[in-house]
Length: 128
Image 1 (cartoon, rainbow, N blue to C red):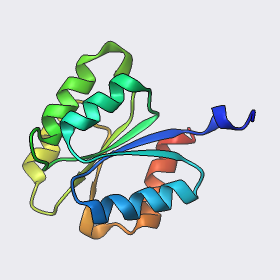
Image 2 (image 1 turned 120 degrees about the vertical axis):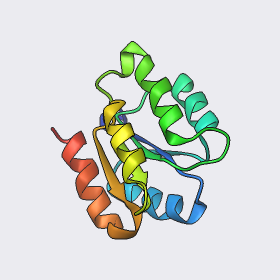
Image 3 (image 1 turned 180 degrees about the horizontal axis):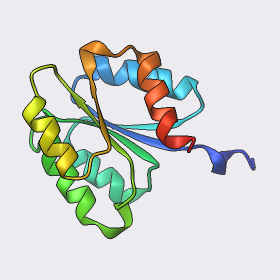
């Protein structure tokens, strides 16, 4: 039982269930506790319910885009040092720059990164 507390918790905010599944599976197999949220509103709700060690945040989503979610998360003092990695598509350079300006730590272009590379990047932030 003592093992449970050491599991790092990751929140994946992604409206594409296929992408979500791939990342959830890969990160879950690697020993992380992964929670998924299909949109920004759901993500904020999950953040109220528990704490996370890292967030993978899609920029383009229904209801509330990733940048809005990012602003709201970073507005909360307790999330100041929470690593947030943006998930983006190739054409979103402007949004990525905005996101990094709003406090995101990094970004991944979904089509360019294999799940293993995503895992490596996540590990880089969580194993520090």
